[in-house]
Image (cartoon, rainbow, N blue to C red):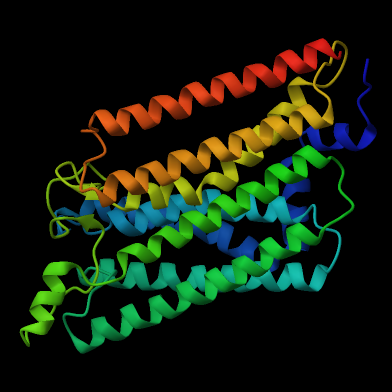
Amino acid sequence: MISTTQSERNLLIPAQAATILRRFWSTSKIMTIFFYASFGFVTLGLLGMLFDPRTILGQPAWAKSTKFALSFLLYAPTMLWMFSYIKTRPRLVRFVLDGCGLMLLLEMALLILQAGRGQAMHFNISTPFNTVLWGIMSVSIMIFYVISSVGFMVFLRQKTVPDRAFMWSLRLGMALMLIGFGLGFLMTSPTTDQLAVLQAGGHLAMAGAHTVGAPDGGPGLSFLGWSTTNGDLRIAHFIGIHGAQVLALVGWLLLAVSGGRGRFLSASHRLALVVGAAVAYLGLTLSMAWQALRDQPLLKPDALTLSVWAGLLLGSVLYSGAVALHARRFQ
């Protein structure tokens, strides 16, 4: 029987809210401020959707800023919590979180500004002012991505860890998040139709698109706006960037359910399951991007897409079962 170590118990015991917030503040003041501000951004967006009847590309004018604020409300505490386990290079950790927090504050300010003006934020080059705003956001996104990549390298260089499998769940989750953010760059290039307009000497109002095979603004899911008639790259982007939360939860739950009396999952078995979960999640993310690039709506998968999803599910179940059986055998 394998006993639960003190370091593992420390990972499992929920801290009081005040303790968590103090831990966040000591890790990064700017990211913590951004976390607090995100509650205000969500509130502002919801009020805007309630009282502002305007629409942008077929969706409520405040829907985009609200979606981003909700996403960041998950992102900020996740990053603060994850990086609080990094004990080396504290100044570099603070630089990563402070830098990301500043870029996201700028991004939310731009989204709110455009929502208030009733203008699209992404890809909008309809006027010189809109072009400047989109240019600022594009640069801020690139800076954010570079800083986040530095943060991932910091995770890889952390050698002393309270639990190896749990730490790898954080590392792999951050890798999935970076892949998800990277998929967003697929949307920034002009579409075939937009290139044709440029080649003909015309002027574009939008350069880039979320939708594949059709202009943005067509029929879409309520609030999310994801296209119901064509492929939509936002889906894979969304799934990927929240891989950090999913893998961290997997690592934490595996540590929780395998602790105490009757424990049968060793650290090696938990690590194997974490890696399996990361591969499965990556497969799901890439399959969503592949589906969108084939101009296929999320809710209308063809037989090939369904076969890929079924293969991912079956492979994950068989792999997890094999790890569990191996763990039982050597208990």
